[in-house]
Image (cartoon, rainbow, N blue to C red; front, side, top):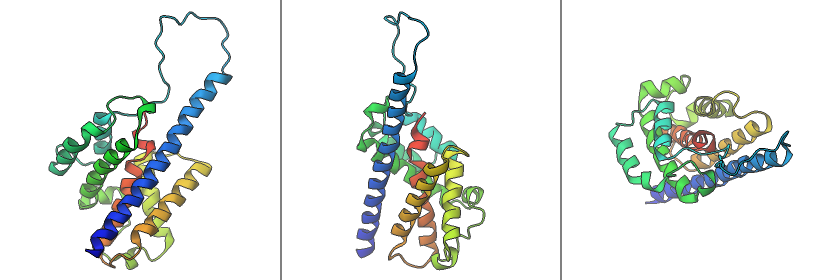
Length: 218
């Protein structure tokens, strides 16, 4: 029972981190769009009465998110576990591409779907080796993560695979790595020293990066 409560406590904290992180990024994107409209001076007057406003920043809808997660992880959308989770949460995920309608329920559902994709990814030896080839998933936590460089390796590989090279740079990348490292340490606290925990920690990093704004924004 104690382990179950620890699991849900860690999951709840992860949800809060993701909601706060993604809303921060999305607000920054909206602000950038707003700033651009203020400082971009028109060179001539154009009649826009018949034009519909098209936002330059948008998010993926439920179907696009599902397909993106499948492509990034290599896990098929037809996987039974994925399909069951998707059928459960798709009505609670974004239905269109309007960024301003994004709510915490959307993030929770996206995180649940990412959780299933990451579970299927990490439990598949071929798929996980394609992203983290230097991690021995059969070893216990203290052996695999004996130093911080290995933890950062897991984080950096996930960022590179799921966010792409150069998407996050400078201070933004540094902050993301710090936040993910702190989350890693939080998830590791009081957990058993075995290979199951090793896999679960990698799943946690996977979930956090796969369900982030860097993946769900268009």
